[in-house]
Length: 394
Image 1 (cartoon, rainbow, N blue to C red):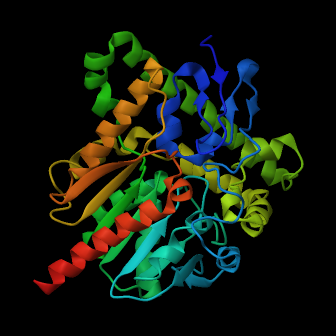
Image 2: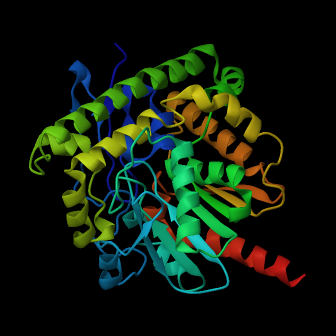
């Protein structure tokens, strides 16, 4: 059995895991859902918890200088938009401006994750975040929560809510891939994009040869095979969480709850932490979390042939596109170095889908850049907004 080592670092750095000593790419590319549990010897799972806020050394609720009362606004449902058939999506818009910026969260998350970034952006634009079906305050949806199902929900939301298009789309992790796919399927909705440590389609296929050339056959093979094996275990784990929640709500004091939910992100404040606990115990959340992962670009490869066609050349034309990559990795560990290098390659390829695309690394950050460095995310959005404004004046 591949040796498992779990290492947790305090202060600015996120939970850094040497799980399986190989399954890092999935942590980076899937998001915080994976950080909630790591496979332990004997087939059990343990939540990653430290005494510090997840992803930062800042005390609880300080964020990027966002007042506590603003953080608390993210706790509640706001505009419940009927997108058809009586199913409603929660939409939270603040600020005003010539452009509208729309945020999508990563796996297992919803609009609360943007509580440190959205207020910054709202000073210059209309800034809106939403909850995907079954997460946060949005109604659950029937059927698998595949990327295309999520994109079609978002397209319906944009129309039903009357949002001014074209929009600047911002997505983190799995939400980053959602926004990338949305831009390909509904280009009229999109003026520009900021993708924050986005998940990537066909990841192994796209980096396999380069990994073999730079790190050797053994490292490349171990990384790819272990990631695939670990993803199967993770999907099965979350399906078990959903099954348990269908019987009765999870007990927040139980180890089961900790294994089935994200760690607390203290910089978002106690009100958001309490709201997360209320929502994450339920079947709707657990089923949606499990379905999104199982049907994601990592859990289901049936969309790969379509993605291969969609994401070739420069399908986004000259639309401004910024891809942000986290900076924290262990250069002394060959497996971690290989995983991180592949991540950078994938993000550079995604940035190249636009003639005005670029990829940047945000130093000292974990996968949750929007928690560690909210101003860096806001600055990238402002850069896209400035480009669009300058183009409008020409």
